[in-house]
Length: 346
Ligand SMILES: Cc1cc2nc3c(=O)[nH]c(=O)nc-3n(C[C@H](O)[C@H](O)[C@H](O)COP(=O)(O)O)c2cc1C
Ligand SMILES: CCCCCCCCCCC(=O)C(=O)O
Image (cartoon, rainbow, N blue to C red; front, side, top):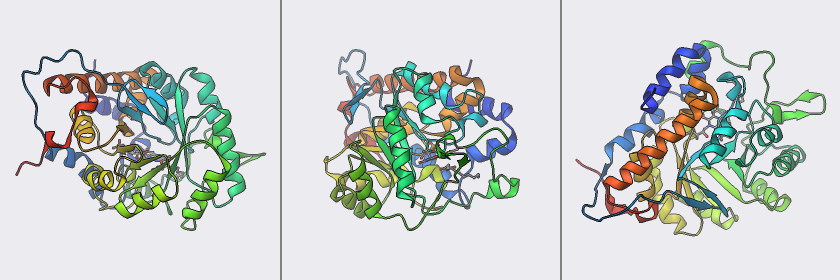
């Protein structure tokens, strides 16, 4: 039995090909941001209330018209079949069992329609790197719609693919034979994902014209971009530095959160990912104004350690930790968290 996410990661590391472990674990540059994501949560202190007489706390949240049983979602991560033969199918079943939302990566190794078919009842959102070929972007959107996805998560932090030293040193450039980015099929070929600096706010506007799905903008760290995103009609903002895999030395996600929350002023939900490893991290992010958080690597570790069961275990651990931390803070609901409960000790 594994009792913490750290133990799940250790188990995953034992089972994974070391090159694939490095791909999942690694970050860009000197991995400053990668480390900062977790360290920033550790530096924050939670200030609990006492003697409130609260019952079992309420964890559920409503996001973009859909409900999640807890404020912990699954962030989009690529290549789940490197971790488990069932890949994204297993992750989606774990998400369905936990009644939470899974963001399916555009770089999934199972096509989004097959992910949906494998996990009836799963709440899926589709993550999209807008392709400069808007006709192909539109084809991707139609696949996500046909699969029943409830939102598009547009990743805006990747005008180029960040340089990850571990992958360079390991020579990891391609998926092994038999695996590919299944969503990228186009007739009898599989396209490469284009990371293009030409993608702009105009592309986002065009995207909103071709779909009625809500758009979540992922990778926002600058408050001015948060305000621009509202002007461009996004339905939610997703504070993220891509798990420290894009711009190294970008701020830790939780450090960037308060300014984004301030800029958004409650107009749309705010999500956050990066470094969430404990239930107390979830409480800190929610207290600072996030409506929910997402986890990337922890779910991959669960999958690699024990397939669907491992992914369920990770979500179960986080749920139990959130519940316990809320009780210890004297709160009846995740909605009761407020900024005054987070302190920066010195
Ligand atoms: C192995 C891996 C693959 C990822 N693939 C994607 C992706 O396809 N699309 C995307 O928007 N973000 C991707 N991300 C970033 C995650 O969505 C998320 O922002 C990050 O993992 C959160 O940090 P955490 O791993 O500390 O929870 C990936 C991250 C990892 C670790
Ligand atoms: C290192 C192998 C090349 C991968 C090209 C496709 C990557 C898909 C995007 C995954 C991602 O966002 C990530 O952080 O990794």
